[in-house]
Length: 287
Ligand SMILES: [Zn+2]
Image 1: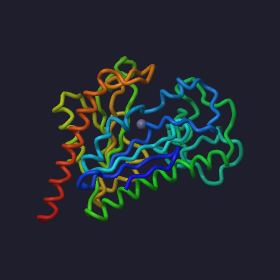
Image 2: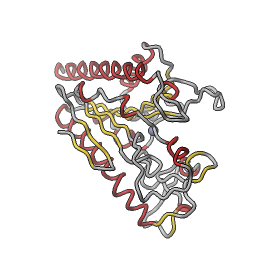
Image 3: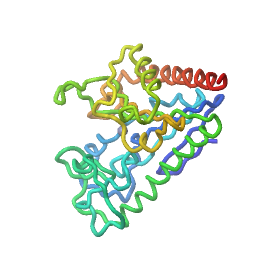
Image 4: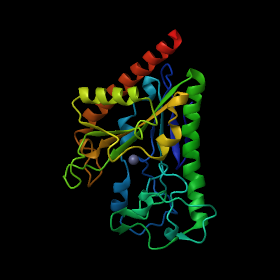
């Protein structure tokens, strides 16, 4: 049974024999809510999206996995941030609980973003406490609830679950950031959100297809893998970032000719991960 919360998220359930494998795409939403009231140009705001990432992984349900995608844009509210990761300078009034702004918030990229990109503010106003609380209730809470339910369901049924948190990153090939140029960056928060074998397996499968990989560099994984990853309890969670230059024009956000090849490779990756999961389930049975 698949379902949708209009304007918020959708969940596509396995269309083949189910495996305990859940994918989610928290940043590919492109439906800008009417109450957003941003002041920067939409085309600049849209560069915050992981545009088309949900589509790159769209084969997951046909292969027996669950796929969840956000519909709201990440610049409206970021489900990959903790609810305390807020900038008090952005709030008109007093926040009802303690805040814990991370370095992301300090650079304007927290739960509620202050900037579309460096130097371009999203708002010409402060946001009301009720306005932010409403965004949390409407987007953040159900997103985490639906993802958590999907992972718990699989874990209950199979005793173990593997979750893949899917993102894309602005291309760093311009060389400005130097040294961190890779096609994919895998993040398991320095080995704390999944068994190391899973990270290594995914890295190996991508390398086999000719991609360059970095692990836990720049993109280590944030709130979503932190919440879902409990390797000691057989709940494994891995973040995958892919360089946007491989599949889209970073100015127009249109798919590039490379999209089809990348999507086909990601479909093969999902099949390989499914093989990993099935083999692990067999091993567990034999124990
Ligand atoms: Zn992302």
